[in-house]
Length: 211
Image (cartoon, rainbow, N blue to C red; front, side, top):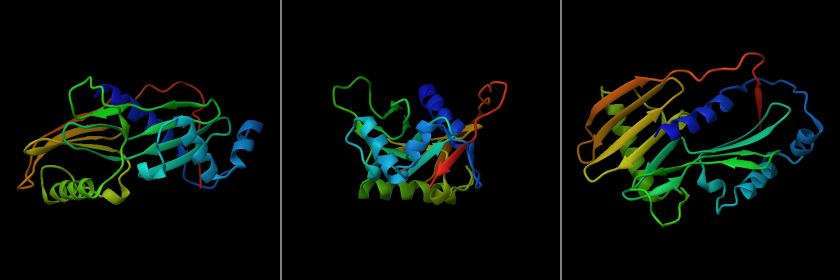
């Protein structure tokens, strides 16, 4: 779980430093050449660099970002659902200029396992179960309200025999709780504050999202 948190914090450090306003960036020649391809082509290039059988259908949110010196493509599923005895890749970060990638599997089974790990692809059953969990959260006073459409942190739902184990990680807090499968009751809620990652001195890069 600690490894997953570190990976997610890396995503947040890049995504949350993205400029939300129109701003011209001074781009080096290599970045300019990549930007001329357009967002859709950059995303496809990043998918090829992943060297996996993955497509845009595997991800809930995709962002192309640049600070003028580097180009990143963020592939994410903010809500991650794992059926019994499963393991998937849900997120990936691609450095387009350096042609490097990063991803970490999420397990709901005992490691190791010879079965290959693939990127998650939503199904009708998983969508129904996610909806059950989110509705249970919003009916409960044990945890805060949840807006699935605008959620941009990280929620993992582990299916168990009689309940769902839920873990939510944001930039400053980690929460965990359980939800009974039949009643939808939320229980065993715990919350912990996360220490902010150390920031290097000097100017912090600001990334602009490419639409």
